[in-house]
Amino acid sequence: MDTIGSLIRKAIIHLDELGYSEGTKTRYRSCWNCFEKYADLKNIQDFTLEFGYEFLVNHYRVDFDIDLTPYQRFTVRSIKVLNDFLKDGTFNKCYQRKGLQVPDCYFDILMSYVENLKQSNLTDRTIQGKQIIIIRFLYFLKTNEISDISKIQSKNVLMYIKSIMTNYAVSTKETILYTLRDFLNFLNTGNYNKYHLNQLFPIIRSNKLEKLPSYYTSEEIRVLLCNVDRNTAVGRRDYLILLLAIQLGMRAGDIRNLKLDNIKWHLEKIEYIQEKTKNFLQLPLSDNIKYALIDYLKNGRPICDDPHIFIRHRTPYGHFEKGNVFWSIINKYLELAQIETKNRKHGLHAMRHSLASNLLQDNTPLPVISGILGHENSNTTKMYLRIDTEQLRTVGLEVPS
Image (tube, rainbow, N blue to C red; front, side):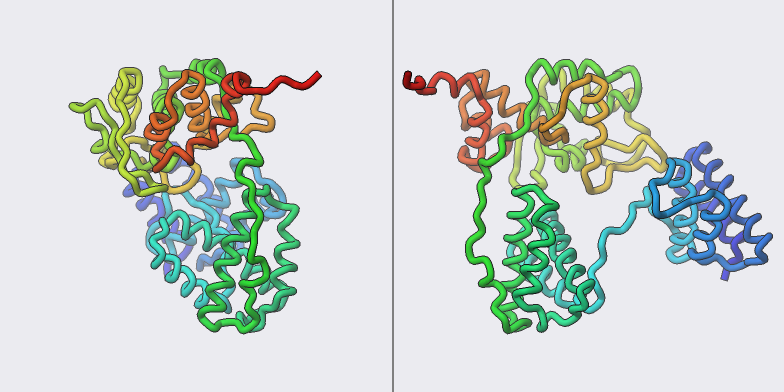
C-alpha cells in the first residue's frame, strides 16, 4: 500500500494528466503538503479517510456541522480526492456529494422496481426522479425500524405521507403521491406485500392550474441581457445560453446536451432530439444567435475536443454534467439587473414561460408557439393563456352594478 507521501506524489502527477491549471495544482499541493507534514508529526504512514478528516478538523478547523468557507470546502475536496485516487486510481473532475442512499435491506426491491420502470419506456430522467422519491420513502421506513418490505402496513405509509406534507409545494406532493402509489402497486402485483397498500389513495386530487407560470416581461429580459459582459469568455458563453433559453425556449438539459453537429449552418437551423420528450425539434438559427454562437466559438470556448458546444471554463475542460447547472448563471444576471424575483421562479425554465407569454402578447397563434416550444399538441401550451392578461381583459365581463 502506498504511503501518504507516495500517494500525494502520484496524485500530483495525475493532476497534470487531467490538464488542471497551474493555479489549481498549486492549491492542491499546498493542502497536501500540510497533510503530509501532519502525518509525519503523528507518525502515520497509511492514508485513511478518517485520518484525513482528523487533519481537516485539527489543521484547518473544519466543523462539518456548520457551513464551511469556500477555502474549507476546497480542503475537504482535497482529502476526498486522495481517497478517490487511492480506491480508483483517478478522481472526478468536479466532486459532488452523494445523495441519500437506499438502505441495504431494500436494495434488491428498489432495483426490481427500477427495472420494471425501464420496461415502461420512461425516460432516464423520469426514472431517476421516481427512484429518488422511493429511496426517501425506504430510508424513512428503515429509520423507523422497518427493514422488511413484507412488513410495511398502512399506518407506516400514512405516517410517511404526513411527515412530508409541510415540506413540499402542492405540485411536488402530487408527484410524490403518484410515484408512491405506483411503487405500492408494484409491491402488490409482485406479491411482495399482502396489505394492498396501493388502495390507500385511489384518487389523488391535483390542480395543475392552481399556480400561474412564472414569467418575465420583454423589458426585464432586455435589461437582463444588457447586464452580461460579452467582453469576457464566460460572458460570451452565458450570453449564448441565455439567448437559447429566451429566444428559442430551449430547456436547460437540451442546451447542456447541444453539440456542434446540431448546428445546421447551411439550413440556418438548430436540430436536436429533446431530452424530455425524445421528439425531434428544429428551431431557427436567427442572426443574433448565429453571431453570438460564432463569437463564443471563436473567442470564448476553451480549446477542447469535446463535441458539446458549452464547456466548463475551468480545467480540466469538458462539457457540463447532468443537473441544473445553469441555475446559477441566470440568477447571477437577474441579481446584476436588479430584477425582482419574489414569488416568481427564477431558473432557466422561467425564460421558456416568458417566451410563451411574450409570443401570446404578440398575437402569435397557439400552434406556432407549440411548435417553437416542442409541445406535442396545443393543449399543453394552453396553460400559458392564463398569463396573457391583456388578452384576458378583452373577454372579461362587466361587474354588475
